[in-house]
Amino acid sequence: LEVQNKLDGVQKSITTGQEVLFKTLTDASVLAEGCHRGVRNSYEQLLEDVKSLANVAQVINQTAENVSDMKIHVGDGVNEIILNIENSARLQMKDFNTTINKMFDDVAFTILESQNGGLINLSTNIKHELSQFMKQIGNTSMHQGTSRDLQEQTDIIESRSEQIIGLIGKLEENFNKQQE
Image 1 (cartoon, one colour):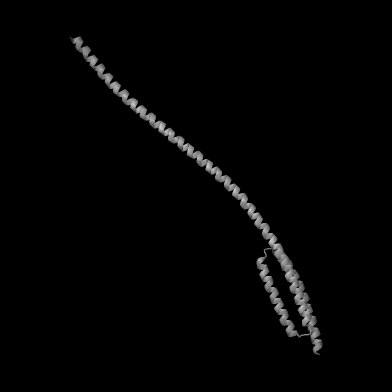
Image 2 (spheres, rainbow, N blue to C red; image 1 turned 180 degrees about the vertical axis):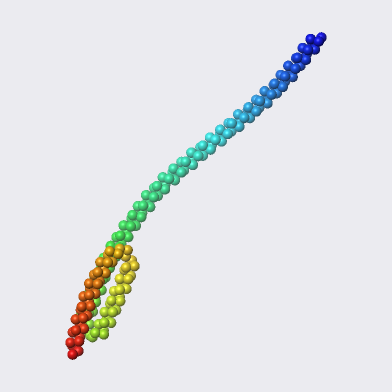
């Protein structure tokens, strides 16, 4: 009986141990399954994040290409604008030269026409023509960006002004001779 009691005790201990072991294995299985599910969910989330990053990289690359294309188009536009400005400046300088030549011709004609008129009228007309001429120079110089062309025009103006002053001197001499 004692052996039977010991065997019953051992069997009871084994049964209790098996139940505890079964419960522990069941709990471990549930934990492992939860862990597996968590790892799988984390993997799927990571995969989605990687796909999103790949999409972002693609958008960044496309944006960089678009910026590069835009830079080329802007550069072409700037070059075209510069070319148009240069052409416009050339045309304006041509018009400016024509206007200046006409003004000097008008001044010379006025001087010759006014020779018989009197020195006061001549001086008034010359002042008026020179004033108009200087206004034209002022207006034109505001529109011109090339100082070299303006310097050439200034040199021409100075030369013509010296010629006009010489003509005025001769006219004064003629006028004074006529007055005597």
